[in-house]
Image (tube, rainbow, N blue to C red; front, side, top):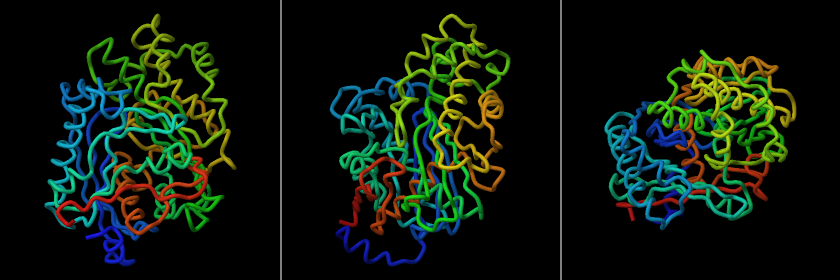
Length: 379
């Protein structure tokens, strides 16, 4: 079946899609079902998670910064595909059954200014293994047309704001390996409208803390921020961090996971606890600096992603931001699965020929629909 025929067959009714996401924190793979017509969210469905093992995480870490064809990438891509296929098969066995899979892949390198981005994992392989149409390679079209290729969740954030019946501008802050912020005005009908969304990566979030914990203590993360909560931030280092050229760029803008590798040097002489707290403070200070770019101050900031479980990051956000900071779970949304749900939503938008990014979310010249559709066994 051709992609055109597939789009025609879909019609306009809401359908169930399975979205999957493996973020730059390298913790594992999320999968979640969402029912949507590509515009509004109608319902959320079952979800699941498969963590990467320590050995798998090491293989994935070695591939960071590498591009397709580099020897480090092939074994890492196999882990990405196998883990996603395992979780997808598990979620497909239940009810409701998804009509589409939105597969983000694993970002190993991101250089939009150089006109390239690399998300490992082949959607065609998943389509053939699962017998389900797969939408993937979401970022390439945006980058090819001059956009940053990231962040891609803003259109979904706009739909979420309307789903929870927000009536004033608000911000969604996703804290994965990198932080990204979406300012949305839910009073505007279409997310691609010029005054509906503004989005950009704020700066590093969990990645430097995770790297610190792995290097110094041999563990994957600072669980609940317990170590950082026992330390004190080195404010001169936080201020020096904010002198980075990235913070002087106007949004939209995006980051590679390791673009702030110098943070490890900044905290090298600090104790474990003070180093972790300083990195948490840097993540929050970057968000505070980013809020200065919003068209109007958001009425609140809803925090999603793994970083919201870090008590030190949340404390630093509440200390440094001048607007209310809330765990997104308190609104009824699922902060652990929001990114996965986003790619299910975006898969339906791609399948129906709708844009997935715009000048105010990625800096692309005009609203564009990214994504490749592989129909696998349906071809």
